[in-house]
Length: 334
Image (cartoon, rainbow, N blue to C red; front, side, top):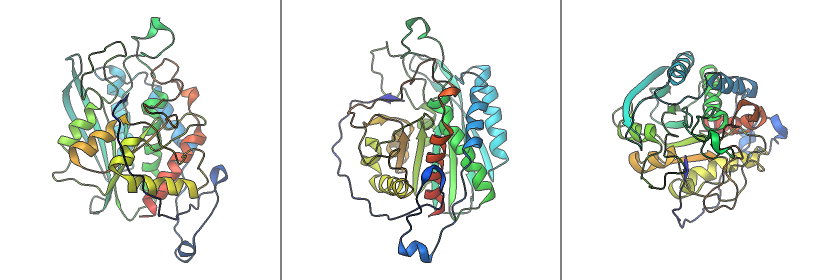
């Protein structure tokens, strides 16, 4: 994903949901309202060790850059693993043109749960990794690909664990999990041409060609860089612009779960990520849970963003657990 300089004036609505969690990991409080005491909701447990394993399995392939063997092998792994969890798995293959006119062979991996349900939640993450370490302090490695443990693999790993949970605990809504390809194949930092829409190529393709004709979802949640220790996920600005009610719902759940330090009630910068194209092209209100520095106009990512140091040792099971638990609460409280 890239930073965007677009400034948006938005009205931040007050959160109206008073929702708690039954999951007690990480010191979460029960905090139930009177209504919830009368109608308790059973929230299945997210396993952070399982999620961490799924992250590591991806990074073990090496950089997952389109048109490479590692990319092909990881696609096969993700597809086969999700077939063990979902009702249906669709591999959407396409060719897209990169910023430099290279043709990329991409695969969006779509997993469908409860296909008969009309009310649906869309969950997403990108599974490719950056072809350039263009923010590495060592200039000699800036044209080398990165492992992308946090930037890519962490969101996919969290969603794979959520898929495992869904397969054992059927929710009352339909859920579609999409691993978007070619999100991070944008121009290197040294390229000042400012070409538009050169990021998020897989999500742009899916938004124009959804796996089901006329597909729609009640709302969507994108996970990006959700695995670093002591991460913070302020309210990304495109999310508050396109889907303020969804932001309120998710941040309220996080707060009631005792995860306010991870989900501060502060706004971050606007990020041109996969959710932007889902909102703009197909019109599904989708938010982005993404590691940002709070109070930043342009957004500042985690320390090792787009460097060779974005490796598996930077991934925290505790952070994966926080994000996964919040998302499971969102699903099972619908």
